[in-house]
Amino acid sequence: MNNNTIVLTGGGTAGHVSLNEAIIPELLKKGYEVHYIGSSDGIEKTIIEKGFPTLPYYSISNGKLRRYFSVKNFSDPFKVLYGTMQALRILRKVKPSIVFSKGGFVSVPVVVAAKLSNIPVVIHESDITPGLANKIATPFAEHIFSVFEETLKYLPKDKSSSIGAIIRPDLFQGDEKIARELTGFSPLKETIIIMGGSQGSKNINTAIKDNIESLTKRFQIIHLCGKGNLDPTLKNNPNYVAFEYVTNELPHLLKITNYVISRAGSNSIFEFLELKKPMLLIPLSKNASRGDQVLNANFFEKQGYAIVLEEENLTSETFMSSISALALNKEKIIDAQCMANSSKTPEQFTELLLTYKN
Image 1 (cartoon, rainbow, N blue to C red):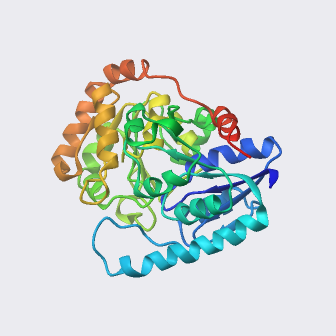
Image 2 (cartoon, rainbow, N blue to C red):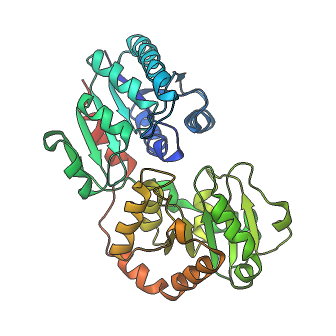
């Protein structure tokens, strides 16, 4: 074992990469050699290679873990098995003292390989109920950290703990001047940032387009529309600006943001909570996901941190009425957000994580 080497894994969505992305600088500062295992075509490869171009990145085979019938359910276990063999070879070469998994399908072969190699595994679960990948990986883990206290009832009591959200310090380092240069927006008009996840949301994008005149009459709109979803018919509106996806620009854009309209991935909504941004949450429906975002959104609404609009109820009319309700309740929501429990920094979480290494 190399006591100063750590392997990170996780992918499939940006939410399964963001915490890894946040702790890598902390690990490097502590003198750790960091390696990443992900898929060959997942968003994790793009994020890690762009953000940390010198970091060793290894691609492995992985199958999708489905809760529904598909003929691929018969072939994908072989992909997972092959991915486990690939991960075994990588771990035996790298010899890390610990493996940290953020979840997603690609993490399962890595976690299994680590257990077979007697390398301690630590898992992080962001949502109220564990994802399928983390459920499968839990028996192989030394410890599981969760964001929500409620998650602990789904996890083994003897090796799990709730630590709250981990918030990146750079979120608080947004520069208003840079944001104004990126958008051309005025400080005299309120700004909404609208995001539909890393892939974008057709339904949300349609609701924006249908209401663009009413929206931009009252607000300035920053629209993170997803890859391939830029709409050229909207680009000449001075109160509307669109980006397919942003990374380093996000803290600057949030600096001038008064309201957030978003999906309900745990990482993102806790960041908005920490920044005290009133939220309209439009979670992925249970028809399109396992329902974790619905649970996250409902929890935030119950605490008074957000207003929720179910995707099944999303129309041009309900979109606008929900935005009006959000603006009307702005101060009440911010007051509730100010009472929220404190979060942890990536530095604090890194210290906790490293207590489990060999």
